[in-house]
Image 1 (tube, rainbow, N blue to C red):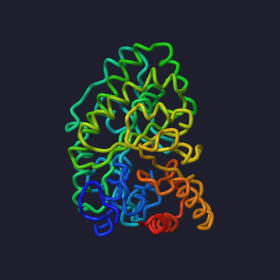
Image 2: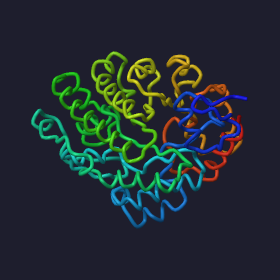
Image 3: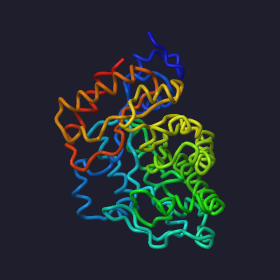
Image 4: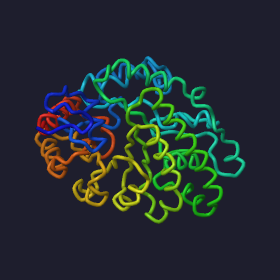
Length: 358
């Protein structure tokens, strides 16, 4: 009978909880079954989400701890996922830095974009407890409500992605303005990244202190860089963030899209688990990042817009490529599509648990 390295109790006789399952995978141990959660699970497809959205805007939902907790717990109750990811937009810590933004359907819009040395110097390094107390309160409430049954996942945008939003001022197809500043004014870029990475580090450490058991850094736009450019302009700052999180004792997931060319350099950043999208086969990605590191993913979200037989085949392909290795967290390659059928999400969670039960 297999023994859990964290305990002398045989794994098959220990109670199976989502938090134990999730943390075992993050530690590269063999859980009782493969843990599963979904990006963007806190919203859109959750039962009751639209009713709350009809009454409150997104910022009200995120800044009211009781409402944020309710939104965060909905997918746990509806889909029985193993992790509860905080219902929080990645832009929230930027408000305390002096950034004026609003969240629109197309994404965040910043009214005072950062494009000069004066703009960068004006950015504040704020006290997290004073800047986002509502996020920390929500984490405490979620941790209490879950009673140790599911893992609490804290989140932050990555430094490159946040810098792109700050400079562009709105979503973009190529973030050309941000990249042009990065290339042409490297000293200014460095100062901006130093400030952002300091805020992100403090933000994540505060989340861990409040009760987050795992953190995920969302570097949504990192796939626009080459490996050499990532090493020069982003890697040092990401390394600092993950080193601080590791020192605090929480495992970290590094998420990005379009990262097939960056897998080896993402390993250098220091996350415990690398999240990959559907553009690279999971087994090939794992070989490249090294089997001693965990991997998350990587079902194509579009499969949730099909039928169960098609979705089930995609699930089995991902699991076949994972090959029952320790360290796998089942997820989508990106977020849940808005039109996804909640029934399929619940069916997928149950099927992953049943198929991988050990």
